[in-house]
Length: 547
Image (cartoon, rainbow, N blue to C red; front, side, top):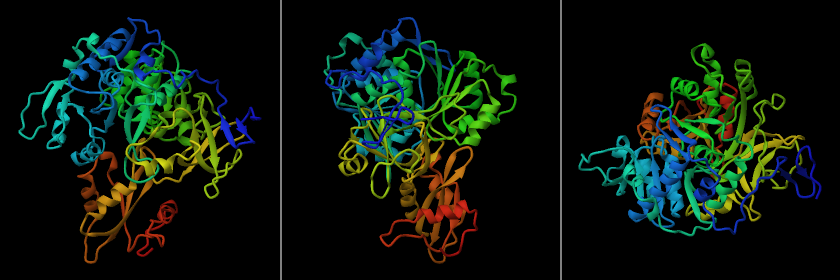
């Protein structure tokens, strides 16, 4: 088997291999869980692991280990067992990695939900996953009214409303448990570790099951390029998202870096934290990097001289945006990462000082194989040909939760995960994402399924038909745009449509643009012809009265 050292491409089997040095990943038969793997990597006891950016409260690595085991013991006392699902619904908080480690260390499964979700959105996820406990904050408690869940409070709360769900304990109480009372649990690597919800390649949200093996493999890979114990990372990326979970709960804890957690994002808060804690690395989404590059007098107002690299994930940045950042901050590298929840994290990364390959999301990380396949024939394509990007490796998810059909659709018989993204890989192994087969909208790195919004729109008695597409937005990347076919005699306005959706979904899912049409273009089988609608937007044409 001959592999081109420049591109990593093997002409024999059509596979692209990583050009990076392979990571040492524990054998898959070894009994090992994520917390044991991460927390056993020779942590110096007094080194700071986690810091609250606002209060300055910190947790050392020795305290992290002890607290995680105490949380595990407390969870066991509440009846949590191997295989049970525990849901966390909260903004970022200091003890999130502690709690996640505690849950996984007794063989239970960490699940998360966006704290911006409405009660109905939370209900759908809870009905699908059936968590035995829900960790949430006093501010979010009202969203669980009448949802029949057992609450463990993050923070202090006094039961007040008659509709409030029962609060059976608090995180602080769990953390005061005796670590020695944690039960001995044998966890195989193929056991589920996390259940994070993603829209997958199409349709409604799906639960992605990542195993201990998946996260251990990805953590091992991250350790090869994420830095060292001398680095300080600022965390405002949501920890309920795989990008945040994999990076801050697993990867950075394994390399013994210091993580500064910003509970609520503001530009001023971010810049003050960089200055106060001498942050060296800033994982972000494109919208933040773009805003930073346009912010006047940053260098005069704040000391950001410690910052070495901004790492952009969740969505890609264009060449013009990358160049704008580099010209504004020539001393700070800006790199990109590409990943999916289904891949347990990021599988492609660029280098912060790579000016030559602007527009590329980088090269394959260690231990990852990729193929670019023809979207019609499915046959692998050589360098510089466009096709669907597929991945294989120990980081590929186990399955979609309780959804065999979707799993078989996403992962083929040879173990290749089909990403739904159209790309080309050049003769130097750099990956360029050029389009998407899947129909997801990426708003500031968060995924929105058009089908969910379309279903909601069709529940409006004045709407005959609807279609939702991504509309380009410089700051957000994409925003949802709705094409609406009104019922006869309806006087529905753009504002009516946006308000109707806005009061039923999380803020990031709101419809931001509306166009009224006589009918929605569809194929004979009923599928929406989104390309026709996107073409109208791209041409900046006036929307026709009839399509």
